[in-house]
Image (cartoon, rainbow, N blue to C red):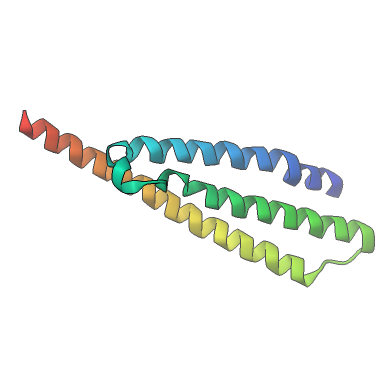
Length: 117
């Protein structure tokens, strides 16, 4: 079962991170399209969350591999996985805030354009 968990973290959860990262990049790109000259590479911001998700996954896999080899958990790896998880969720919240701001700006611009006609 532990080997299946390791495989899940290294393969499937890595793919899932890439998929949701691309989804967020597309959302940010679409929402900030009219502001692209000001926003620059803001659409790549969601990949920071993906990076920390991958770091968390591989640290958890290393922790599980160590448990299989030695029967003990490394407190350093456990703390690293926890830190990576915290950063992942912080950047997740920031990404969702960015999407919310982009949605509000898009709605405000649509209202502004509608009033001009």
